[in-house]
Amino acid sequence: MSDKQAHLNGAYYGPSIPPTKQYHRPGRGSGCGCGCCLLSLLFKLIITVVFIVGLAALIIWLIFRPINPIKFHVTDVSLTEFNLTSNNNLQYKLAVNITIRNPNKKIGVYYDRIEARAYYEGQRLDSNELTPFYQGHKNTSVISTVFEGQQLLLGEDLQDFNKEKPTGIYSIDVKLYLKIRFKLSKFVKTPKFKPKIKCDLKVPMSNSNDTAPAGYKATKCDLDF
Image (cartoon, rainbow, N blue to C red):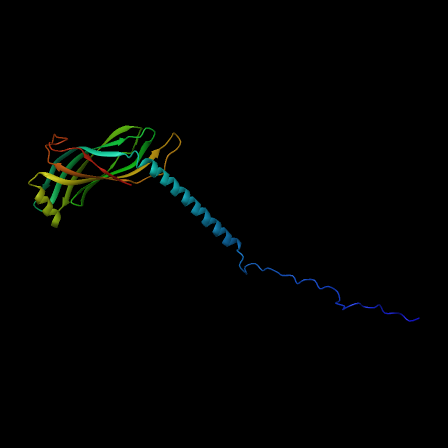
């Protein structure tokens, strides 16, 4: 009895072939390695910190500077020596009192650094470091300093001195270079700011006993953040 072969209906394709596996090799392709991801995270962190610090500084700027600025006035001066020697050395002695007014009700000010400088016709005469202090709410403080020494005058500076000498009134600039912090509450203090204070003075010669010579008026100083 002969065996009968089964009838195949249609084509015979054979057994199914499994799909080809794809392997990913580290370091190739468009993927980001650990080092790249770490640098990206660090960059984002730096940007975030810079943004937060900048935003905080902007808020402090908008709150304090336009509304209740600190006010500086030169209230007393004493120019007891301002003479030119035969070799064009300017010998000077200038005493200055500067009044600082904090008009804010809830804000204190730390003056961490105060450097006072005196200039004549753009020439720096002398500089002094003053004692740091804290200024409370709605408070008026007075700082004092004396500039003394000599400075060589040449060219236009010498000409300007000779023009002012007959009047006895001299154009002297006093500048303050500060490092300050604002105290918002018992536990909250702002970062340090570095404002510059410029006082353009017209100072008459005075006797050795005068602190505010005749003809001198209190001068308001300019505040620059």
